[in-house]
Length: 170
Image (tube, rainbow, N blue to C red; front, top):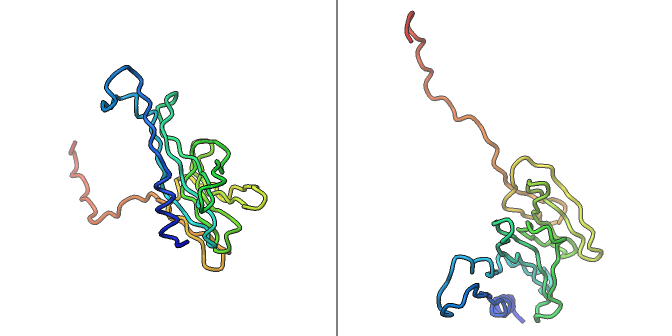
């Protein structure tokens, strides 16, 4: 089965569920319906093509915030299960080149950090202690390194030095 076929089969199996909150016509979308929606994003096929990891996104009605959890499914749609620990803030899954590990971003204590999961044991380890959220995770071809980008705030360069105030100026 080709990678393209696996991705198409995966997305055709993802359903958007809307549960009406009031007795109204089924074709009316109400503001509270957003809490019944789910969608998949960022699907990543394992190097051997046997599994797909993706972020499953929804809204939490109790916090009025988005949730994102990592889920995994076999190429044929079987063994579909949550992969993460249920924190509700996991994203950006990236398979190691050998498919034995998965790097991802998770919010712990309000700050996004890079984590690593060993797929055979399910053990995880936090790899970073960042002040800003990481973006664009990527493995090196040999699987030894993980690269990412992160905003590092900096004062803008001063193109011109302002003149000194004249004596007595306010």
